[in-house]
Amino acid sequence: MIANPDVLQADFQPADILHRHDQIDYLSSILEPVREGERVNGAFIYGPTGAGKTCTAQFLLDRLADSSDDVHTYAIDCWTNYTYGGCLRRLLEGFQITTERSTPKDVLAAQLRDQIDEPFVVILDEVDQLEDDRILYQLYEHPQITMVLIANRRDDFYSTLEMRVESRLSGFPGVEFRKYTESELVNILRDRVDAAVQPDAIGEQRLFDIARISGGDARVAISVLRNALKDAEASGAEQVSTAHIEAVIDDARREILRMTISKLTSDQRVLFQVLLEGGELSFGEIFGEYEARVDEPLVRRTIRNHLKKMAHYDIVAYSGEKSGRTYWVVDELEVGSAPA
DNA sequence: GTTCCACCGGAAACGGGGGAAC
DNA sequence: GTTCCCCCGTTTCCGGTGGAAC
Image 1 (cartoon, rainbow, N blue to C red):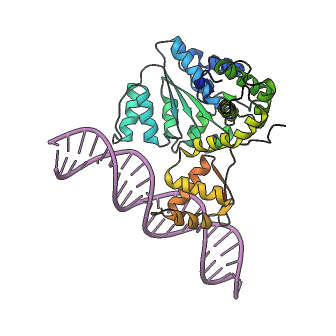
Image 2 (image 1 turned 180 degrees about the vertical axis):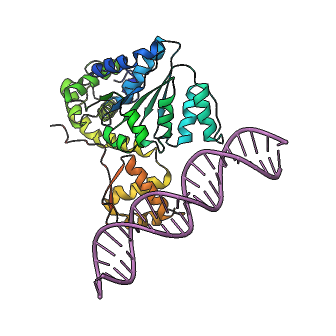
Image 3 (image 1 turned 30 degrees about the vertical axis):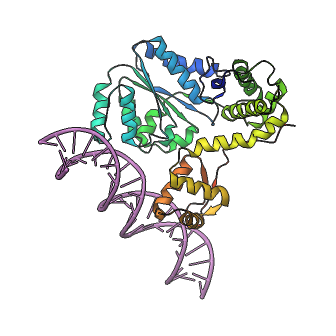
């Protein structure tokens, strides 16, 4: 049934990004001068998870790199490179400059300033995860670097920046990526189906079912599609049925959850599990349960930092400013009701 | 109003890990 | 192999806040 499984992976880069042509055209017009060697400040892409932000930005950078040998491009995941030094090192790596963990940060900054002497377009994905916005200021001031910033919420990001950085970046043209509509998701799924599976493996109505339960999130929709096709194939069916889709909704949920928690440290995973099982909990309840589950627990202050970081990741949420604060897991995968 | 307790978060210190220099 | 330097996660200290009990 499945002829080309790679096409069903969430990170597969399609030849065309459906329903994002307006954004692509606009971003292309912004980045066009870079091709001619001119300096462009950059752009800011924002919108919810699964709206195609990263995929589109990567698509644009690939196209830019293909069209000109003189333009260097690189993408940095600020979730994993959130420290000032770590982000600087990744940037220099992108320009083929090798660095060491022990290299002083001011040396890295000087290398960035002095050694990048050709047009360089950088995607900073999940830019709101950066701990230190000095890097954004230095990139802005660099005569050869163009930034493409990606985050979920525009206003939240700008509100965290130091004034001198905010005043510069607020001039970046913003490009909003809204959630996909059901019919848009159906087109995206059909595109993948046409490239990946045998004809008639899944009917149009079943694609609508998947689109409806995915809440506008292409990542979820593709995960449900992939799992439903696998389930149908394993059961010897010739076509995906409603029952196959119903059977894999929880699998898709777990898959997304696994992808999310795979980025966490072991202690953060315990905290996540405590909150997942306990629902809404106070700090004292979380810490008590955490302490009982690990052999060498970290101190309270560190756990507070971890919870704050997880809230920054949008994995957990909290209400209340001081005492009386409670924490809970954010249900990121908003899978709706099962198909009718 | 006062005291106690739990909690938050800034600041500084500590220590492990990794690389460079000798 | 040893020493030094640096990064970065963790710990310690401490001031501030808010709610509950008296």
